[in-house]
Amino acid sequence: MEKWISTLWLLADEAAPAVREPKASDSVLQMLIIFLPLAAVWYFLILAPQNKERAARKNTLDNLKKNDPVVTIGGIIGTVVNLSEDGSEVTVRVDDNTRLKMRRDAIREVITKEKTDGK
Image 1 (cartoon, rainbow, N blue to C red):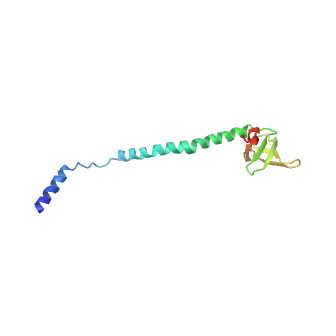
Image 2: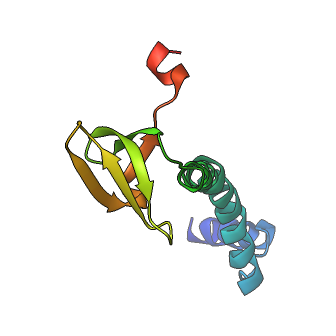
Image 3: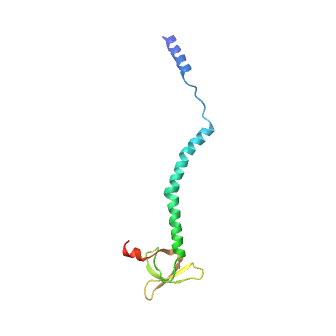
């Protein structure tokens, strides 16, 4: 019986395909196969929309002018009455006698006609 088992063992050993040692290039290729799609998903779902939003905000702040109705990041609604010489500060009229001086980047959005109509 032992002879029979040892014979089967030897036959199985000879029939088994040779196991090759993994190379370093194999693991790098596997990492790239996983990493590249994840990087693409990250870019299209996170970075691209964020860059688009940042560019739109910069455009809005660059086009800010006197008499624009605005909303600040604190939720204060007012009208721009003055822009500083260097453009870094804005004076916003909140009420007839109330004016607030703030940084330009404290403006969240410019209120347009379409936004007030609910469109």
